[in-house]
Structures are given as structure tokens and as C-alpha cells.
Length: 402
Ligand code: ATP
Ligand code: MG
Image 1 (cartoon, rainbow, N blue to C red):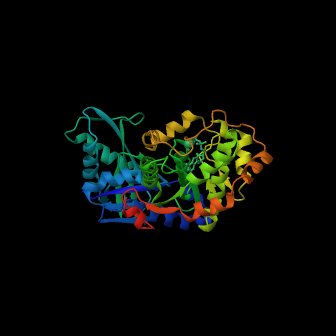
Image 2: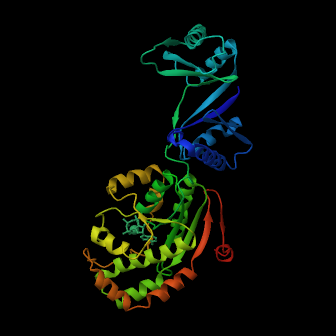
Image 3: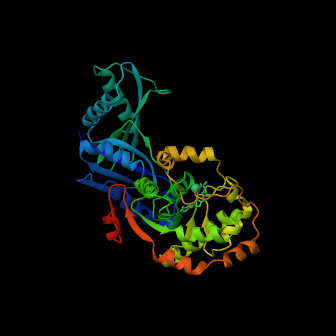
């Protein structure tokens, strides 16, 4: 049988003049997601994509496409010549794949090619009659069938399928520009990154670690989180920023209750500088209003006060339970709950300030050489490109030794 994957998109069809740009991006992303399953061919025809791929790679390809944003649904289709007998035979093969004795069915035909000499109802009833005459135990039920056999007659072919598998929806990654995600090892920020990808934002990630207090396990965890995100968003650059020195200075010289807020302010300053250097216009974080003491509205304002570029917080109105549900669905949860210390879970004060005063924060920052520390942190950032399959270090050496 001549089997293909039919890939449908939704929201991007609405984008007017930008439509060709969206369609091209989605085509690139589909091709990228299938890397390693060669040989394959992706064709764009009349607002849908067809993937030609070997039978043994068909189900892996389908699983990968279920992670490509912009795709609304996928079907494995059988391609048939425009010949009613051949269509009937292919319909029978399609039914056999999902057959249960006694199952009910209905045939649903659409005929975009009006040159085909039979009308849609004629095709449906011819195919229905053929299926009933077969040696399978089938019944017709036009109201609540167990399965629907779809026959789509367009151009020079007919396409037959019975299953429609849901895709993720959203927009193709890359159509909405780029963002820098502050990625901790926690549950929230990977979900925030996934939501950014979902709306078409290509992300780079920035993680602060505090060696030797945070070990290799914590860094591996973040790499694995990036790998998971990259299975949805293509390759992702991870920037690892050394935060030990800043953390020590804050601990030694500033009031304990303010340390978390001061650490976040330092992170945001560094993130902004890196974003500007990389020509990235926005930051993303996993903050959710009121979730912990450092995420009160007052703290968010105090932390935000140090940056000029927009900070987007996709989880701001989410409950923890809702975030965990998404984390489970996208497979980041089991990585996030690995028990490695994050730089912020070290030295956490028992009672962090919930209503920080900007003047006091600024005064505390004056007691350390903040600019110098930030410069040094930025100079020592290590950047790695992470793929769901393989990864390559821009600095080469440092990573090759690990
Ligand atoms: P998460 O589960 O994402 O860690 P959280 O609920 O634990 O979130 P916080 O630890 O207060 O919240 O962090 C708030 C946000 O600050 C995180 O979602 C993340 O965007 C950023 N952040 C925190 N720690 C780090 C870190 N070590 N490196 C990079 N970003 C961080
Ligand atoms: Mg955290």
C-alpha cells in the first residue's frame, strides 16, 4: 500500500499575508523533527503537508510530529489512484487495521476534484457496499459509528484514513522571534519555556549554577530539561552562568531576608545583558504570582525594576497543580523532581522579605562590587547547543573534558 502521513495545521491558516512565512517555517520544523529517519520527503500541497517515509519509520515519524507546534492533527493515509475499484480495495485495507468483529462504520467522502465522475454520496455508498460484502463482520451506523472511513478526493489522488491524531496546535517555533528563558532546575521554568515555544518563540536558556555547592548533577538536570524542550523546539542554546561569587558576596554583606530578592535582581541584570548581546528582545521566567514569598507582586516589581527589556511570565496566573499537569504531559516533571540542589535552594533564608523596599535593596547592593561581579559572571558564561539527540559545545574544550 502507498502510505503517507497527512499533516494538518490550524491557526496559521489565519495569518493573512504572513501565511507563506508561517507555512515555510512549519515545513522547516517538520523536516528538522524527522532528522535521523531518512530517507523521507515532505511535500506541501493545498494547505496540507504530506510526509513520504518508509513503513518502518511511519510510527516514529508520527510521534515526533506530535511534538511539532503548529500541527493540529496527523493521519496515516493510504494514497489511491482515482479509480473507484482501487478506492474500495484500499478502504478495506484501512478497515482491517482497526478491525473488531461487529464494529460499526460510516464512510465520509469529500470531493474537491469535481472532475472525478462520482459524487461524494455515490463514492460513500459504493465503498460502504463493498465493505459490507467483504468477509469482515461489519455494520453501518451513520449516527454513532465506531469508526469513520474518510475518503478525500483531491487533485489526481484519493486519500483514505480512519484515525485523526491530535497535534499540539500552537504556532511554528521561530515565527514569533526569540526569547531568553531563565531556566532553573525546578518544575516551573521548563513549563514556561514550553509555553513560549508553543506560541512560536524560539528560546535560548540561561541557568545560574554555584559550583562547587551545586554539583554536576544539577547541571545535567538542566541539560536534560533543555533536551526535553528541544524535542519540541529544535536545537536550544544553554548558557551556564557561574553564580557562586555573587551569591557569596550577597550572603556575607547583605541582610539575610533580602538575599533571595537580591539574587533575583542580579540574575535579571545578567540575563538582560546577555539578551542584549545576543540580540534577543525578551526574557521569560517561570514566576507564578504568590507561589512563594519571592513571587509576591511587590517582589516581582522589585526584581523587575533592574531591567529595561520586557520580562514575560507565561505562568503568572497558573496554580501549582496546573503547572505540574503540564510538566507531566511534556515529560519535564520527572527530570525537575530529581533531588539536586539549585543555587537558590542553597542558603535560603527562613523568612524572605515579602514587601521589599527598593531603597533598601539598592543600599544593600552598594555594599558589594556588583558591576564588577556581573562583568565577571558574563565573561565566564559557557554556552552549549543542545539537541534532543546530540549536542555540541561552542567552547568545545570545557565540555569535551566532561
Ligand atoms: P522554578 O520551578 O522554575 O525553579 P520556582 O517556583 O522554584 O520556579 P523560584 O525558584 O522563585 O521559583 O524562581 C523563579 C524564577 O526565576 C524561575 O522560574 C526561573 O525563571 C528563575 N530562576 C530561578 N533560579 C534560577 C537559576 N538558578 N537559573 C536561572 N533562572 C532561575
Ligand atoms: Mg526554583
